[in-house]
Image (cartoon, rainbow, N blue to C red; front, top):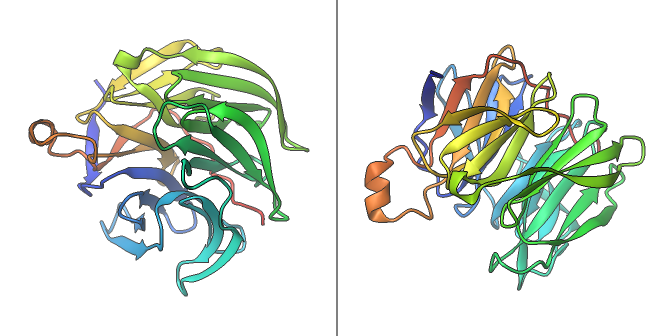
Length: 290
């Protein structure tokens, strides 16, 4: 049985977007509705917090320092030390009906971010690509809740899910141009076992998906079959990322905002960050090259 440790009892409202910094040996993560970006050092147990001016939806570390951040409906460049904020586009998506959501960089350093319908049932959201020249391109439409972005170790396969459509897709990915093609169903998920939320890929090319509302993380083979299921002490895991000195620790964020009082009594660690020894290494998280 896999040992599961709560390394930070954060009690996050919506904990999301774990990103491991190899240089700092620390885990960046966010709390969406509390408008906060955090940096947690597993050795010292110190968790530093920066408050943002809007909902924090996703982010990536930049090669030249700072972050690219999706805030509400817009995309910005932010220096956490000075809190200087430079706008790329303050309204990428229609903020009256949608907001931005899951985001991650491809292996060439482009930032991808998807949106979600605020009502969570209409196919009105899209997936966007931000290139290093800071141009923004709408790539995929007719989404409800965009999630699950990840790339194979060689960068030639892109994974993407829609939590509300219970689908994880795989695409052939042109790493040179940043264009996905040949979309096919990678896995059709069972809602009772969790909706496909944030994800990560290991060095063997297996895809790890957080099953939100299912209380588990599922490892899929490169051809879409379930290889391993890890049950968690919380029902709302949101995203996973590899970290640690050897990149063999899987960190998992979670949420508590959607739980009732009685459910919270049963899940006292909801909103915490968990860690497991994955038994396999992850791939270093790419920087945004813009």
